Length: 418
Ligand code: EPU
Image (cartoon, rainbow, N blue to C red; front, side, top):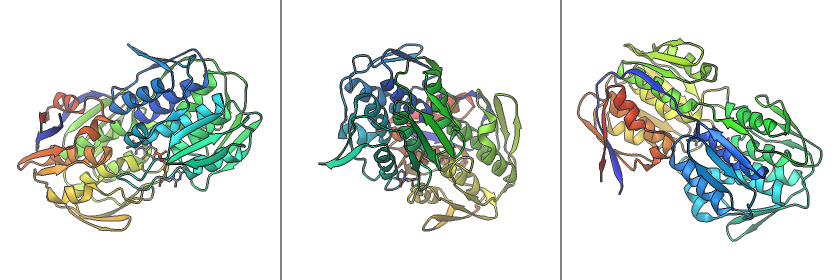
């Protein structure tokens, strides 16, 4: 049954919270199980709908999936090569099986992802890279069919960085004949995590985390044990919760160095940040400072934090702009935030935010994962009235136990059936 989240806001959130494993690190690692027969064991897998969707896709491809404390993926008997429309339409990250399927079986058929709530999101850069490695690409009734008699190492120049494109190409190149260079590669920590896991499996990848990744192909890989890194976006969302409610939240189990761009903007906004080896603490204060932000590929300010940071800016004393440079339509949260009293005007990829100092509760609708998180933050901040968020299934795709975690920080938040 469809569910809503109800929030009685205005309470500063306080306490400690443990960050979960990263969705966007777990998904490519799960797809990498297709590269090596045997049992790949992943630790710290978050309990998320997207993870379940990826398990469904891998099972469809013949991978044995067992989830206890660790997620065991065994592709010894894998024989499928098709990612069907029903799965790709619910989760675009399904395209991550393209590179591994092609590398191991010489062919892959993946439903062509359509546009989504945040933009057109084509996969042309993934396909151009695979073509450069000798694969043939054909389009067939809404499916992309990629085939090869043996991938060969190549120089792939991305016209602009792509996270899953870099991951797909890295996974294709590990079993290719010869050396592949990925130029203008994505530098996100999740790409580094995948390279680290693949190297543990026997791959030879260097340069992950820089704009040039070099992969020397090898003939076989063997499965390993690997721990999924903490979720950067979940961490950032809880830090901002302290900022928007004037609270004090310590996020345990995170990697502070992943958060330089966010920390810099939070400090400018008058949110005090303390950090240790594996924790960050945010202490909110008044007045919130107005800070201009532009999203950029890592190490720039993450697009996945844009909606949440905007909530903080709606409460600021002043005027600022938020520019979205990654996705062309990632402002679906703006009209909903305005219904809660925010003053935001949009022109193309830029939002101009005039701080209103306080928000009020309203009935709002979630449109995508990070937009949903921003509505939760706005609801926590809104001291006047109750917030009811519908279509919360978006949140369940990417935030583990969010309602329980915010409750443990003292928020009045619960789920109700529609
Ligand atoms: N793009 C193309 N052609 C391509 C690939 C990308 O034009 O072949 C464009 C996209 O349309 C977008 C830009 O390039 O405008 C960057 O997209 P990218 O490929 O980097 O995004 P992604 O790999 O599809 C991942 C995350 C997203 C996150 C973006 C940007 C995963 C599974 N997803 O998507 O996460 O926003 O990188 O950092 O890693 C989320 O978790 O809420 C989420 C949307």
